[in-house]
Picture 1 (tube, one colour):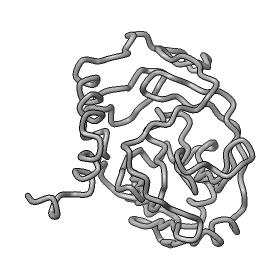
Picture 2 (cartoon, helix red, strand yellow):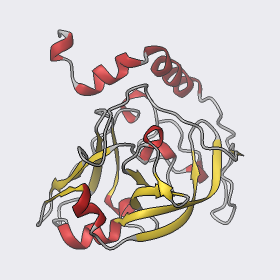
Picture 3 (cartoon, helix red, strand yellow):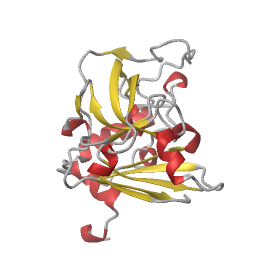
Picture 4 (cartoon, helix red, strand yellow):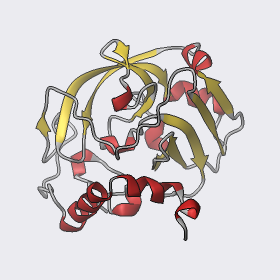
Length: 224
């Protein structure tokens, strides 16, 4: 297969091959695993440590998305597919939430303030078909990640445009990114451009490279 014919996710892996290789090695070795399940009442999941800053982790691709060029498609197995411009996105009912985030590389950050559009509102508009069971996030840098529809359909899930009361910085996925607090943060795709509803599960970028298909921090679902 030539480079021009390569799948988008293969091209994405080529941007920082040493990073991808190291993460695949971590998965094979079970790096950072403690073997201890945490209770849901514990705020800090097993193997995690608190940070005050917000580390920047990505594959080195800056898709250069601006509010003027941003758009979001919501489609697949839904009754009412949608496509929003930035203005249409901001015209939706706005949702504010405070949640913790947990990265698979073992850092956690508490009390992040988010503003955006809730998953509950999105679901009320698109009306997933009965056969829809999973969601795939697609990003402007060709990154993908998957999750069960039941995890998307949660009270604290949103598509965020602001963090701590300010516009989401580009290096953290601005103008808009997914926020799924109850799963490891690789599931909260940056630079979101599409939400696809599907019947059968389809692993995303990291899931195909040794990361766990679900990603629950409290049961240490770091790797598959």
